[in-house]
Amino acid sequence: MIVAAKAPVLAIDGPGGSGKGTVGQILAQRLGWHFLDSGALYRVVGVVATRERVSLEDRPALARLATSMDIRFVPRTDGGAAAVLLHGGDIGDQLRTEESGKLASIVAAIPEVRSALLQKQHSFRRLPGLVADGRDMGSTVFPDAILKVYLSASPEVRAERRYKQLIDKGFDVNLPRLLDEIRERDARDAGRAVSPLKPAQDACILDTSQLDISGVVERVYGLLLQRRPG
Ligand code: DC
Image 1 (cartoon, rainbow, N blue to C red):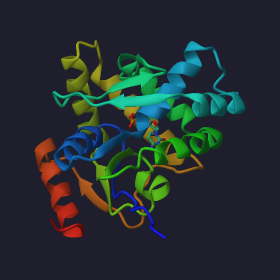
Image 2: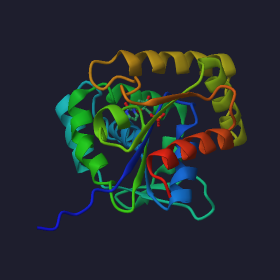
Image 3: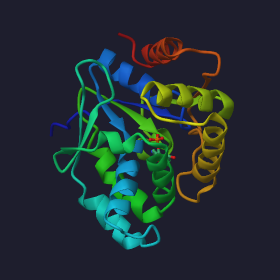
Image 4: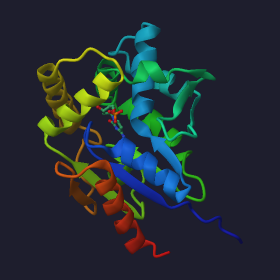
């Protein structure tokens, strides 16, 4: 019997603003692997639930919504953030706001939503490989990842990074409020009962506070080469 090779997974976890999304996309491009932005899945559930007036208390309805979503990511050739298509329509712009991050963090604490999204996340695992970014890629979704990296940085550094990103995109933001939101989101993500934000036992923890994006990319790439020479 021929057993199909399982695609290798590079799991990159960490709190918001740790740089995992940017680092993950650059590495996926360099390796020619697929990329999963798992946070976008939770953001879509939060945004669509609000749009369709589904109560954030109605767990079965939120789980049905998560199961029925047809989500696709279309990578951009210029290296920018991938377009997120929901039932064929681009909703990427609605996902990048702080409000959608907050909604995502709320729905992500619901066990029924997490299990509804588990299979969807597994379906992104295809050859030649997958770079998966999120909070529980190494601990729960892809426990057999060939490399698990957990990127950390202080809330102040992350707030500063987010501030610059949002200002560059033309959003009107307030740094102290952003820092409060980051702390609030960290507490909710780390305090929930299911798949809380924490490094997998066998994760390599990398503090990115003093590193720029290319510094983090090179470190993670180096770790991957140690696991997979050539
Ligand atoms: O990575 P992000 O900022 O797009 O994630 C938004 C929220 O989604 C985050 O606050 C927690 C939740 N999330 C999660 O619980 N598990 C994941 N694998 C990814 C995101």
